Length: 433
Image (cartoon, rainbow, N blue to C red; front, top):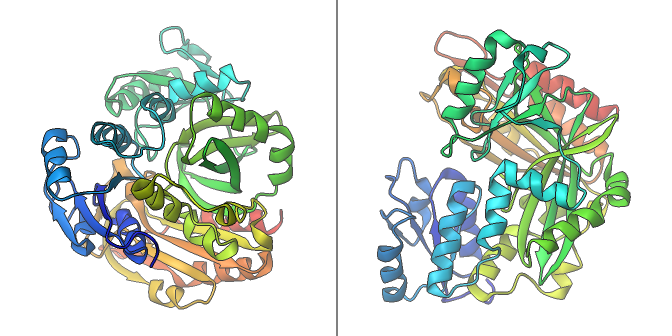
């Protein structure tokens, strides 16, 4: 228990991952209320909250009325980009601390605005073309593109294209996932380019590099980029990043007014250098805060909850624990991505939970759940995320091998749904780095 005993936190959104927020806030002594308009089956965090409301996060009048009536002390949300602007607005109109401006959130959420911001500060991004002027006749296997809705997340709507005949359908698919009907076209970076993730914590106007990780994505048979299959920390490029880009990125976010909070940026590491392609002004779905707490004692989720209720991120002692070298530890986040089908049997997860290096196993689907073909390759196709914290890289590798041996997901037709072959290739690449 901490200094939050007796304080009331309103959490916007009750999806499964939000349980982390509720549990952490409880451990810090806070009373937690969860709200959204979904029922408890789609909003399971409501079941572990002290109280829940079936009120939309966009119903500012009703929420503000209850905030006053219930003497709420602060508001928080995370993991979902589309919740950030409602969070910022609700905090602003009720006089609560909010960790970034509307402008900063928009630049973090909108991929086009993000890339424009990077260009202004000399931070490299993936080469792109305007939809209005792009010539699809230039497409080929060697000159493939990715079409992205500027205002969606979780890999939804991202579409690969390598020939002119498929271009109209690819554009239509990306547009369908964009609320603003705005799409950007980027060069398809083949791995060759290792994906690299960087994470920062902002405290009173200063930014601190929290972690640099090697992020691996799967490629399906059509070459379409899938979501993260695994991530490992610290990255083999950590020192290179610190020497070449760290100060530019810090200057950029200071320039757009980020004074407190957390953020992450995703990039490709290629022979030509680093290309950033998106960011989030929030905690990421990888839940690395659980692992950094073990390795260094610094937990970004704890900081964010404290900020929501007190306006202060952390003590100077806790701030000094932030260390991109992770105090010598090795961390991994391994996912269980699934092929399309209906889940009939899940095995191995209970054994994995018992492994001493496994910090957390989050199960996002249950027996009977259907993975739709159109959701394959998005966050909706993940069975689980497994978080590992080991005292060194060798122990981390041994633990991952055991996970790959034991986990299995069988569909109703008897087929294996776990896309494990590529995950094995990824692990081999990391092992030999």
